[in-house]
Image 1 (cartoon, rainbow, N blue to C red):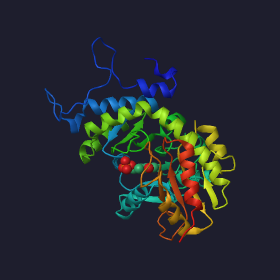
Image 2: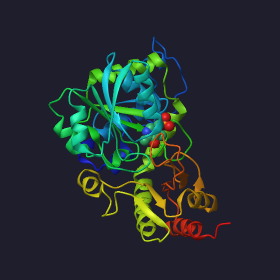
Image 3: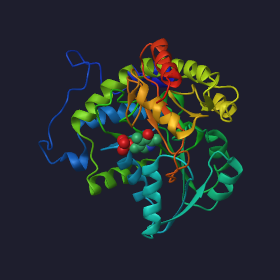
Length: 368
Ligand SMILES: *Cc1c(COP(=O)(O)O)cnc(C)c1O
């Protein structure tokens, strides 16, 4: 199939199905086998159910994909491929477990780590020059900030530094880092790809055959293997991802606009708003602004606590990317435990007026 000429929303539905031979199942079957006649063993050579998922993501990203037990297993595998004492440049703000992985590896002497504000393109380029790996997360957690992936990748094209992008918030529909020249595109498939809050899975894509081989070796060595059921569910989830993401980001923009206009709200972080600092960059290189947003309140941490306690449709829970909308309080600065009014929401697929009524009612409810 000439997938390169199709829209990503079509590719997400068709990729990874195998040949259209008469009588073959439309969907790759769930293969529950750890070993196979001959000599293959799933931890080492993989299982057909992982391979179907990897083929689908690889086709979307424009590279070869390797699936892992979770997003953080995928991140760990990329770090494991680095030489001893490699110089890594990581984001000063971003997913907490990525940041603790990098800082713990640095404390152990496995890598050296420089942290940089990756929204500052000049500072990022300066820090990345001469490094072995630049880790970017776009959009970032929890402030949904935008790093200029296109410009950063282009400026570092002739530098030996390798670039890894955690693309979880964007999904392969909204941004494809390998097309800009990044070496690795990583996803927690536990989020939008799976889409139903029912699985843990991660995936890394690369255009470099040797890197893909190394990642498969690390997966086998660390035992960070995906589950067959999880891979099968994630592929099933992928089929409806274009519809889910489209609906969720349409609602996210409406909620962001209405939150911005609400007197109790002091700041909204969402690149879809024209006044957002990431708006211009995201409009340039992304195909949408996504379904994650965060906001802050004039009333401080106490009001944020009340808002989260008073929602009825939004679910108080960590994580993101499912069909159900989630709300969660976050620290304003990574590593800080100071009470903050920052609230992050993962917009799901419910009716947007129900979501807004729920948020507005919670924002306006008289507190004790
Ligand atoms: C959830 C998440 C991860 C980690 O993925 P798991 O599947 O939970 O291991 C990494 N990066 C981002 C941005 C995430 O949201």
